[in-house]
Length: 231
Image (cartoon, rainbow, N blue to C red; front, side, top):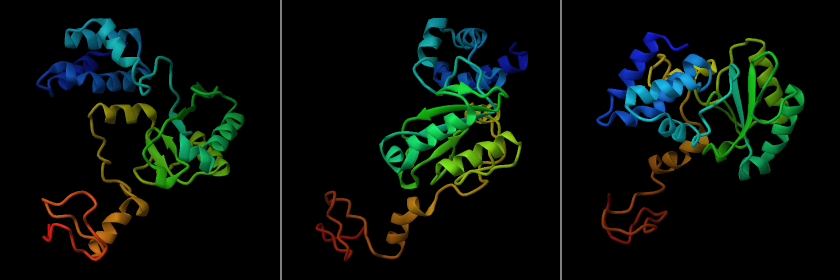
């Protein structure tokens, strides 16, 4: 059951916003951090704090795939199977993990450690195929490396994301998404070389932004612009 401390934190979240109902998304994450899923009690609590109906809260909760109506394991493992990741091996990774873990999509292993799901694009196409663990990136995966990843998590080993912090439990990650920091925001690299390639080119002088009055695409490799000015 939700504690009075949780109710206080739900009210704290709502108070962050000029319109309290704007806090509903992080409030739902807080409920999940406490109960491991969105329970009817959690839906009711959010509705009461915000002065909404349970139907209104449920309508939001069922719209987003990040909100779960069934218990989630310690680690939510999401395999990107959108176009580029699939072409680069995402489908093979997902099939191998299903076989290795003995679960299907959106199912949890018997030990409660891993919930497996296929997910849509994670905006990391330059690191395809990508496997997310509690919303942390694990880049350039293969079926073999993905199996090793979940085995290490199940064994309780410390695992760091490719671009991000040490991987915490799903409930801990949900609390961070609710807006309660865990002190690890600067832990690990936030971006990889591929994402920063454009910045390196600009820093080296190979490209120059167009002038404020110029049109898109007016910048050239030589650094001159059709507008004749420099940004």
